[in-house]
Amino acid sequence: MGTGAFDVFDFVSGLVLSEIEQEQTGLRPSAEMVEITACRLLPVNLLGPVATGQAMTSEVFDGIVDMVKRQKARVAIDRLKDHEARCRESMAYTPARQQAD
Image (tube, rainbow, N blue to C red; front, side, top):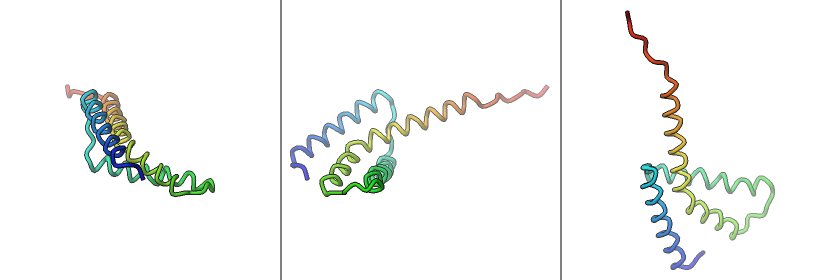
């Protein structure tokens, strides 16, 4: 468990970086999307070491949880960017409607 000051610093830094990213991209994932992303990141990152037989100490577990907390908003933004790019791409490839003669 980290110190209170460090946790506050991480929280504020994350907020500032998130705002900068949002201003640059114009994208803002919903709070639900960020938390769903965290729910996906946590087991994905926990199962790797478990599947390979590595010991899961409390320090390793806490490190993974902290990493998920720090990365969830960025990963949600990345997924939102990917989704929008796929939508734009699929719209670009939609055949034009033929006009009736």
